Length: 163
Image 1 (cartoon, rainbow, N blue to C red):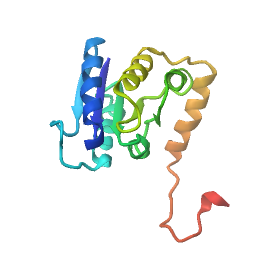
Image 2 (cartoon, rainbow, N blue to C red):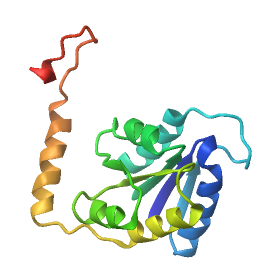
Image 3 (cartoon, rainbow, N blue to C red):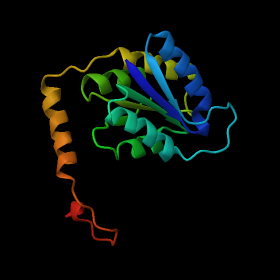
């Protein structure tokens, strides 16, 4: 499997550990984000976009993103068609995200979890298959939302999705 991994400045140390782990597990790794251990600040949407592009263009099978909380990376990655990203904080959620949601980008916190916890989550996530069956129907419904490409007007206080 080819895994695209990226981090902002908050996630560099975790990314370095995870890159080693993913390689040891026999996967190819593409790295995005700062190269040095104590980098200057980096804007997380830039890194999330690079990893999401790798996954949605099929240059990578899956992606891993690390920022301070994992939340910003998750929001940015989910703006790309075909991406199903979530911020995961435990091994059970990692497993279910693969089995039920076919999660293709795992988002993690570089500040709020230990490197060991991140490694355990990645290990479970990479080794868990998608269960298919009834879950495929649900993923197809999500994909249909992307196909419809709802046009969102400029913010004015009136949001058609709230009607």
